Image (tube, rainbow, N blue to C red; front, side, top):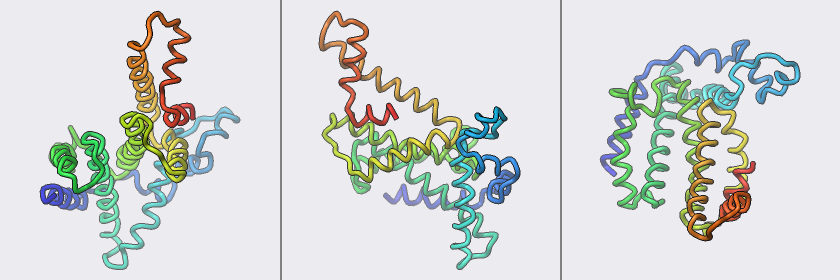
Length: 250
């Protein structure tokens, strides 16, 4: 825990000293191009009118940047200067994404949830050097030095990990895990948010969904012989837990 605390503290200080990037202003106070995204977030007008659409699947990334920097720095300005509040806000969102990513990955690998579990902490200590805030961040960084890119890549990946975390636990516990209505509403919202949060998310979802199908296809191979192709595919879908199948269809 001391190793992780020291690493997170040092990473925060590195994030705090990172320069701002030039794309922030045009999103926080929307330029004409960015305003078009806010006016037509899902591209319906562009499709109907057959017009080009700027950044068609990045609406929520722009929205998160806009809302975050219009509100969070104001809170910090009660204790630090306006300029410092911008840098502090950048460092704060980066370190929060950093810590949550380390936790989720550690929970997935260790199959433990408690932050005091020695197995989870050991995995987290092994993972955290991969999160290069400076040093080798250009080659192996996960939290980008650009705060704009952090909202476009790291934050959506974090939300995707949250989304698939539920799938993983359902598969691992063989549908014994029961989720509350709040969890189901949260996942339903993510289905809308994720595809419009950057260019990486849709292909990752497609690849992961295909891998889930292949996983259950492999499990069904040894159950019966000489399946008809259609019957075999039907059997695979029948084996996928209802919880996962519902959200894959969505």
